Length: 419
Image (cartoon, rainbow, N blue to C red; front, side, top):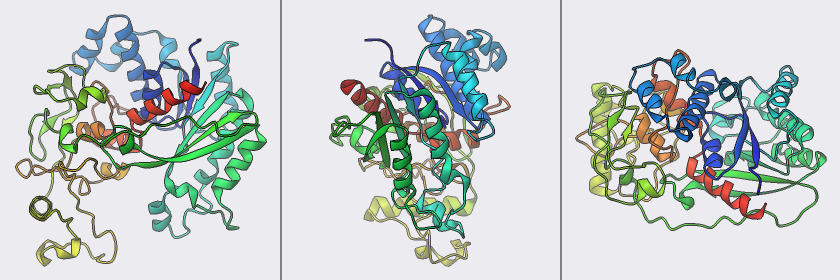
């Protein structure tokens, strides 16, 4: 069977793409508006090329800070990096994007399009926080541009991922965006079917439900690939076991050795390749004394009573927020003794209160690497910034917005089975 080529739209840091590459698909191009995420995509593609060509030591030198990013990029074919297209997908840019993709394709075709527009416009939290309920937000209509790619390239399949709020988001006339979307895809020649998939049912230690819509060119019925649910046989503690213990404000973005690990999970999820593998971005953000006191209370409450902390239950001297009516669970422990954590979100780039480490001795929020592991990014995955200097905040944002790699791989393999 020929290698199936795909185009990744709204690619982010490449969680979805990583899963499809693992399953044997070949990326033609990635289109992404965020410049830092584009560097992450380039770095990952460069690493894959170096790995295939037995030159992994170049990547290791780069991560260790021995060579700069430009020198690292100079070690791989330029065409590889040029396949990452840093564009906003808009009416203004769409023809430029088509031209660049056509140039990369050089007469060959695309078998598959993957990706989902930014979810803020559909998310229930986004709609609740916006006074207009996100109506009129241009991100509501990015699916129209997505459809232009379907019309032009006519792939056999497309995979469209988004938040659960997509199923209930309405336009100003009260019509569901999802209904309009499916109607438009039908006009483009596609039959669509969808399921709500929870990443926790596919080997990811995170409760993360997403709408996965799959389109197939032509008129079809019951074509959605069989997704086999898996037992939740591991606990969240697996992601912490082999990482060095650090306190708030400590750690490093540079490579650190992980400890010996004799369990199954990290290998089964393809997070870790070998026992003493190095990893990056195991650096904790600093916290105020007040926050650290609250973290200890939250962890103790979970450890002793298996109860979540409500903000109103805190001693008055630790309550500095005036909002006592909503978001009362704003301080939440990532409980190590549960089979899955709460959903990782991009808000973690602003503060870590919703992702408190379960070890009271470390007393901090999760590091980017720990969050990346919850998203099943492999330990050798590096998160870039625009400047080339490591940025913890930028890493959190990219990780929070990503599709879990393992879920993406399971979708990709299931699709292969019905191709």
